[in-house]
Amino acid sequence: MADVSDLIQLGSRNDRPKRPAPDQLELKFSDEAVKQLDALRTHYPTEKACILPGLWIAQREYDGTLTPEAIAETAHRLNRSYAEVEGVATFYSMYNTGHKVGKHMIEVCTCLSCHMCGAYRIGDHLKEKLGIEFGETTEDGLFTLHEVECLDACDRAPLLQVGDEYIGPVTPDDCDKLIAALKDRPDSSVVKLADEIVKVHLKADEK
Ligand code: FES
Image 1 (cartoon, protein in one colour):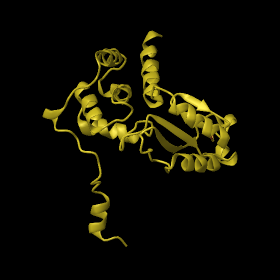
Image 2 (cartoon, rainbow, N blue to C red; image 1 turned 90 degrees about the horizontal axis):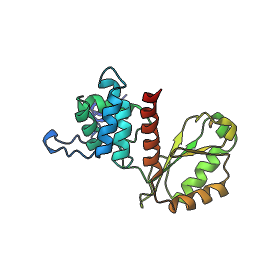
Image 3 (cartoon, helix red, strand yellow; image 1 turned 45 degrees about the vertical axis):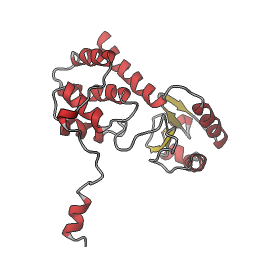
């Protein structure tokens, strides 16, 4: 049975990213992002309810990762506490908290249908090609690899998600071609996904 001091150690999260001091916070949202946040604020009865779309703007503005600074800026702009916004950001897996993610995130569905159609073989192939495990980023900062639950397109198993695109069914050869194509792509698929989601939130106002 674990000693109490072990439990305290387990719960201490010493590796948790540090919140920036409020007086050292540099605001980085572009003018366009500030306008978008103002527009989104009008969709909701409270600023608290605007945290989710606000975090998508932050994820785009901070190059795909919700750093402590990105969370602090979102909290500042929505008049919420850092702890509250951090709690939301770390609860949902589509927000990238923790280590800086790569320019492209390859997500491998390993849920039942994809599993039956060889998802782990695809995952192993990608791990070998990229030299990383699930949850890691290549040293050149180009790729992050993640294992995810059902993406709701089981008829395309085994399925990958890259940014706002679903790709499947895929073979190991397709994965090689995908990696080569992504290396040549100038824009970040992680940032593009965040931008597309912000646009969907903004369009909800037009109905
Ligand atoms: S099991 Fe992979 S998309 Fe549903």
